[in-house]
Image (cartoon, rainbow, N blue to C red; front, side, top):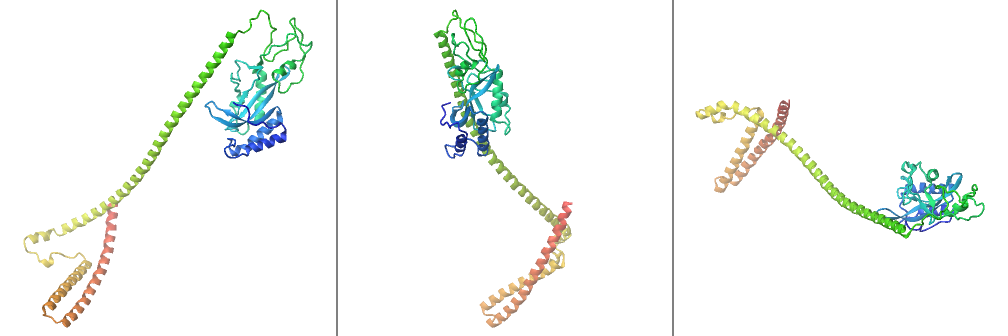
Length: 413
């Protein structure tokens, strides 16, 4: 984390203007919160500042564990912590991460140079990250920053997270208050005066909210440079380990992103093939239905041909004996067929007569005037035969359709 980029004045009206300004920005400089939650974020911060004036809303750059940096809102300052009848001020920073308020904020204890984070602590990590049940059980939209601070103050009062690394003065004034020494450690907002303490044989030492302070003994060895070097080496090793873990995480994330891209591409190909298969399946279904229809037609025609063969078997035997009359070899099944046969025969006969007249005119056997009279008469007669044949054909088609429908119902049943 880096120092805040902008710090509004603590005036309530100016705080409202500051929040309205930063939350209404658009474009690349806008804060990464969703539009439907910015109004609720503004209300949470205003309510927090109203109940805890020691916390000030700011914008600052937050660096995630994966190296990403983003400009976020934060509440920086101190919160009260009652301990053994005395109220102390704990410096904290509340970061409103991108998913706030649907998810809980990130809370850090922000010790000054005179403070050290207690190790181990049930709710505060060595890096200062705070973890309490209220953050884990965050419920949108009922959870808010004011209740969060109340829970933080309660948790810290049971087990303070910081202690001062400054040694008390062995020759203090005769009767200093507890808060005169502790306010220098948490020097944001001095707490109210507390009870006075009694003298000891070695001098006056105020009680610490983080355990009893023992008077310094002359025989106690002071920390050597070796201890400092070991602490520095340990800190550097931890930082190096964190960097290695972050690098591994980034590499794994990139590998998983590449793998996911491949899976998405394969999924698109499979979907396209699924559409092609479904389309081909429908076409095959239509073709199957058409073939079934054609099969029904073929079966009906086969039945008709079998019936015709059975009816004409005797005539075939007579034909083999040469005792068959040519005119009686084929019999019409109904009057329509008989009429169609007569019309067709007359039509073809007239065609032959007209052809013979053409030859006779060319040879000079028939005069041209006689040729024209005969052709006129023959053409009129041919027209009537053809018109009759067209009507007979239409009647035959209707009868055939009715017969096919009857046969189809027979096969289906």
